[in-house]
Image (cartoon, rainbow, N blue to C red; front, side):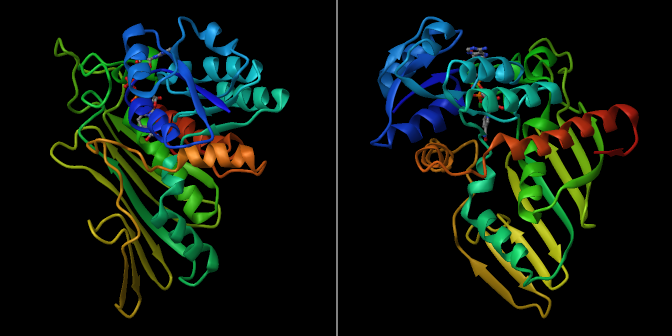
Length: 344
Ligand SMILES: NC(=O)c1ccc[n+]([C@@H]2O[C@H](COP(=O)([O-])OP(=O)(O)OC[C@H]3O[C@@H](n4cnc5c(N)ncnc54)[C@H](O)[C@@H]3O)[C@@H](O)[C@H]2O)c1
């Protein structure tokens, strides 16, 4: 099979193209980006050709797989076009910027008979997978509450643009700020860990510190707090921040009837199971990847995308399930606007 990449920024370079380059059964066909030099750079690094237009890439009959790694506002348009041209699509998060766009993406996948998956890497980390098994086995009792946070210093130094005028800070290209950029990972993760759906959300978003180059405030939130209530009764918080300067938090605590699951809060032990008698089981399963890692090369997202297609089996990255996490994101936007809780 051959793969092509649409959008040649940081996540294509650090994760998608790199992880594909490790697979012997997939050949890199080429790259397209609005900014040609970015495609050229990745061709030099990973091989394949530079496509001059999106249509040229999508008309290449040999390309069966595409990675959609463009700015959020274009996820739906590009993914739908690719599905209609008969490509399997791995689209980056957040899936799209409206619920209607998310639904149109899923409909396009059904109509074309091709697969549509979303790059939710947090579902695939070893400690998260283990925590899901523990919760679903019932050995820790019911989940009562949780807190989860994803906080770092902001996307401006991560983006290939490397500027305070990055698309991440503009409504027209990003649509969302930290709540959806980082919060979608955690909202989706909690749904995945609990095996439950969200009943209601209450969200507050702020622009506290980030500015464009000219000093004016950015157009999307740089901090947010969400209160999520689940159907089976668990409730808890999601905290996101782009103003967490100097370090990163990407941690989750799940409080159950028989103890606590602590995820990625210890640098050595990615899962600590605290039993109600105080006994601790410390498991060194993996380490959470950070934006400062030089190569985000072991997310497992590419392997899961390709293997589930080759094995013709459902995937935990399938868009049909991820859309339910996006519903919560849109409900959070509405909640912040209205100043009240919003039912889903
Ligand atoms: N899963 C994750 O953990 C993760 C991490 C980082 C980024 N992302 C997501 O990946 C996407 C890309 O982010 P990034 O960090 O690579 O950003 P980036 O700024 O580094 O790169 C984006 C690239 O896309 C190009 N582009 C934008 N719109 C385009 C279009 N319509 N057609 C062709 N090229 C286009 C830009 O020119 C730029 O080169 C975003 O949606 C982001 O949310 C996901």
